[in-house]
Every structure is written in C-alpha cells, then in structure tokens.
Length: 114
Image (cartoon, rainbow, N blue to C red):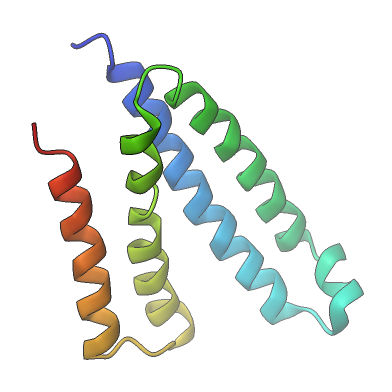
C-alpha cells in the first residue's frame, strides 16, 4: 500500500459524500413546498451535512494530493450525479450530455496519467 492511499481514500470518500449530498438536496427540493420548506426538509438538512463531511475529507485529501489533481478529480461527481438524475428523476441525458460527460471522464483519466 502506498503512502498516499489514505489520502486517495479520503478523496474518494469526499466525492461519494458530495454525490450523496447533491442527491439529498435534490430530493429535499422535490419534496418541499416553498423555499422555507425546502430548507427545513430533513433531506436538505442531511444534504448540507453530507457536504460538510465531504469537505472535511477533501481537506484531508489535499494535505498530500496536489490540488491541481485532486480538485479536477472531484468533477467525476458531475458524471455520477447526471446519471443518477436521469435514473431517479428522468432528467434529460441525450447525446450532447453524454458527450460532455465522456469528455469530463476522459479528462480525469488523462489527468491521472503518469
């Protein structure tokens, strides 16, 4: 196991919690009536909590992972959230969106080439 493995694990945890936070926020938005209701919805509150814990893991990750690599890697969450948005809420995911998501994923792969 490399010395950076715990930091990459923290980065992964941060990404996964960020994805969970986004899904929770969307769920809270969909369930609630009005802006005040949205902020008081339990899913919204859990979403904020998930984002907070994600930020803590991200801070741990950038202790040793260069931010020029860590921050763009977080964009993989865009791909996952877009696919989940399509599966959970029927949001549009046509060829233009798929091409954009493929470019994001390809960029992340290129970023991690040694």
